[in-house]
Amino acid sequence: MRSQFRIREEVATDQAPWGQSRWLSHPASTGARQVAALDADLAPGQGHSFHKHPDQEEVLCVIDGEIEQWIDREKRILRAGDGMFIAPGTVHATFNAGGKAARLLVIFSPCVGDGFEAVDMSGEAPWRELRA
Image 1: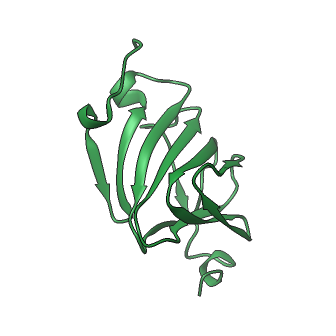
Image 2 (image 1 turned 180 degrees about the horizontal axis):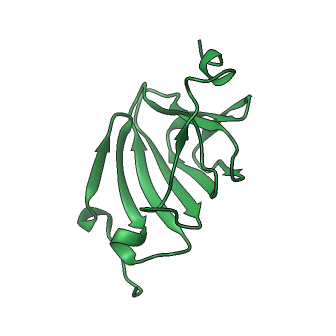
Image 3 (image 1 turned 90 degrees about the vertical axis):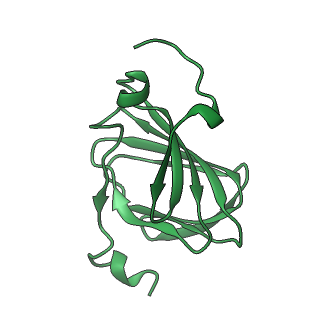
């Protein structure tokens, strides 16, 4: 592990059904053990449905755009400059609520696996009914 700059244009982009992301830090890119961070673009109409991180804390900050953020059964609209903290094991979800990509900074701690682990909860009650 060594300290390093992570320049946006130089970091590999990962494609996902919900958009794209770039790891600012995770075990494979920096050797990090305690913190994983990613820069993510959530595409219009897309989201990361209800899930939880059993052994990790998460901090999310909206850099640009607008998201529909759920923490347990509470929903809020977050905009640039807004953020949230998620305790381990808390079910949550993030959906793009605007007409353009939403840019997010997401931080997980400690690193688990390749940086984070997510357990899908979207098919279970009450989560499957919340956005129906």
